[in-house]
Image 1 (cartoon, rainbow, N blue to C red):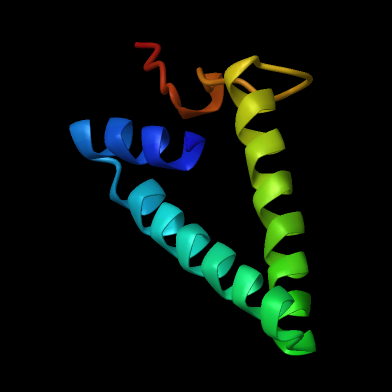
Image 2: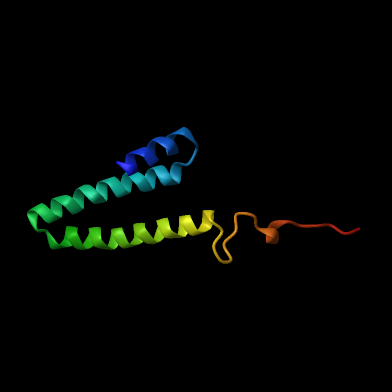
Length: 84
């Protein structure tokens, strides 16, 4: 259910990469469930790998928005000051 809520909020903005990632996630979940029911080891393994990647990405996004460690939304390296 949370993935559908996130999809709706992404459609409201212009975040097309998260929208495509959400669609891939939905398809992978369906294939993972199908692989579990039909006992297809390749589908279950693919789903397990995708789940680890999905979890790592979400942890990165959470840490980025909370500015944990050196992660920052404001990057001072990209500001160029001209001293005349």
